[in-house]
Length: 178
Image 1 (cartoon, rainbow, N blue to C red):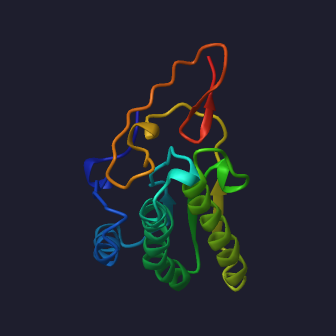
Image 2: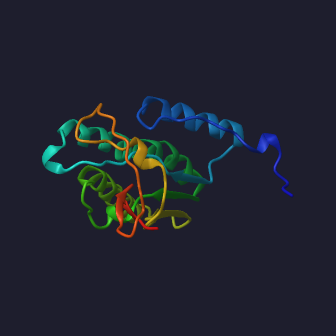
Image 3: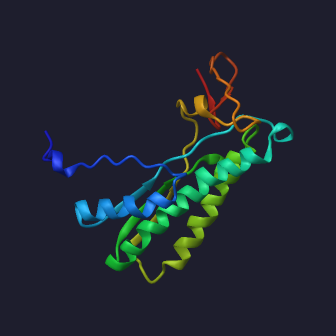
């Protein structure tokens, strides 16, 4: 039993790659609710390919989406939070943002970049002790992100299946166990 009403919810599709739209989308949210208390950055795309076989364009696409898209949206929301003097920015990264993993050199690099950016941002906000910067680094999980993972070529589509037998099968930057 919830006290939420329909007008308490706003569904607003957002494309992390369309950075020009981030300002407009942020303004829509502020106009609708009057403020933004929390930003949860939880968008991105994975990778499944060996470094030796991966085109540089794949790395560029991963950084554009996973890193720069997140930074862009954060930069639109942060001034509002500093003006209010409070807020929370939660960014979902990955354990591969802390330690690399095979078949995920670009994905890991984009998550390392997020770690560096938000750790540095936290130090810049010492004058705003009520703005919380948090990183969430999930470990082993099962998800469908692997179905849209980049491979060695930018437009190549490969479907990955996790069969989860007695041996771990590489999936979605994590290990998939039975």
